[in-house]
Image (spheres, rainbow over the protein chains, first blue to last red):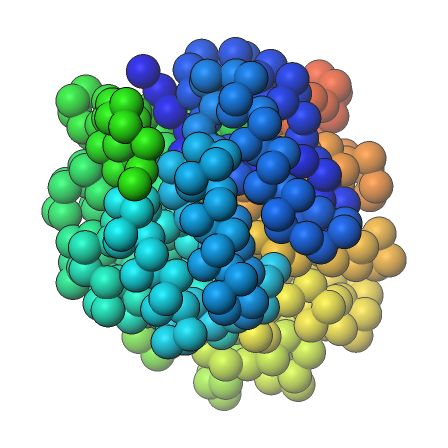
Length: 253
Length: 221
């Protein structure tokens, strides 16, 4: 089974959007069975409504796996929204976007949220590589404080077309076994292959970042990786099942 | 190249003349000599060195290089600084294109490189990676403003932006590149195919444009 660990549903404040039907058509076009759906920051700014939207979509479509999205600047309210999304809407993880919500991912103010993720047994997916707020080293700092919370850095933790982000992303993966990366838009293919062969294929998860990125390109990026078939299967779906506990019927508690 | 169905490729070194790699031209020329019908060389120079211009002349005349590669992240030379402009002017005198790394870092953004394109309008300036991840719209905007700017498709992950570039500036100013071996050439070809261009537009992007550009290069000024 192929699982896309990062897609977005809804209409964004930033001008893009994707409906459930559009996402399903895109998944079908490349034979991807399931998709993690992240709330998009809506024009009205309020993430609760966006959490409702992906929760409703997942309630109607079992191929979808919803995440909760909260703004850590709201502190206690953010923790309560995480609890609501996980407990009521079936969210299987927390999505953080430090760039769009404007916070530093290594800020100790996030600790109550991460503590709750630990209690709830849910992973954290971080929109990584944004300058000053979610550089790989900053995500590493979060991972250091919460070594038992699985963390996924989007875009390989190093969306930098000079390759200047690779050393930090690799070092964070090397130092923190709870950190993983998704493959969306990664520069370069050999970075992904190095992670798979040197640190282990279980650290990589296929993600498309649809609709901002093109799932037709992103899935091929993984299918054409020079790794053995067993590793490729892990990247395409096996790792997502483990990190998101998809085989567990019990809701996060 | 064979796996991706690529017949010919522009090649260059990762390092710059003369600083880190004083024998870069000889190395490149040796490699090209093994596949003279498939490989085409660009010289990568460090603009701060006084001998940069002489090296360029040697590269074109003695080593049959066909273009110049500049990577301001590596050499900290602003694209529109005088040291860089003199390199661009000399390349233009040879009618050789200048390929800039154009991504999201300081000294490599489309608006910074556009200042060089404006200062040397007779030069053909190629924006490598066409702006990277976060500056692609800006790259297309400056290409629309300056007719001597070309957009190069490698590494950036948006097939729809290749289509947008072709629709905005015309297929004659969009160039396919792979950035191999780090990026997988056949994935980079696949990306351009996903842009939904017409057969004629693809032909321009994949081959005609660069062959026309390189066909005009003069070994001697």
